[in-house]
Image 1: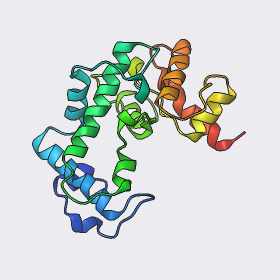
Image 2: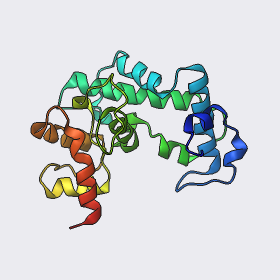
Image 3: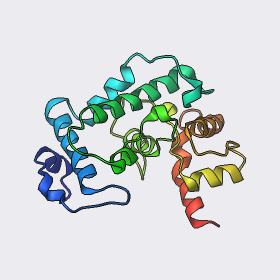
Length: 203
């Protein structure tokens, strides 16, 4: 992208990523994501507009069997869940070409009950202000953010007694976020970077 991601998205050509694979994603998975981003920025206002639309959209009643339950604050989590679902639905509905599991690995469906780590991490970057976060979005409060759970954060959380659930899923995200809110109600996700670092260092 030559440090110009917006320019890259707006002028995207699929040939620029032919043969580029990343972990579980093949080139056609990544190409389709950029095709959708191109449409999003040219026609629908960009990522901020999409997330904000989802955040302000009416939210349905949660479904316990699909992990859509929270004990923090039903309104808060429903708004965040609805927002994440709206973003996912946009990408799924605008995928016009071949995609594989890599596409769905990058953009998992929140309805499946997974931790949606990447979206929660992205929101942390965009909403929080600080040395490791950008803090450029102001339509969401830091108190509403959900902790991005990966194996490192989950392991450290269990060792500290902050997480009892054994699966690293959406319910675990809710449980850990709730416990972190007891320590810092206004910014529970601020602990994420330190917990991740501690988990990676293993000491």
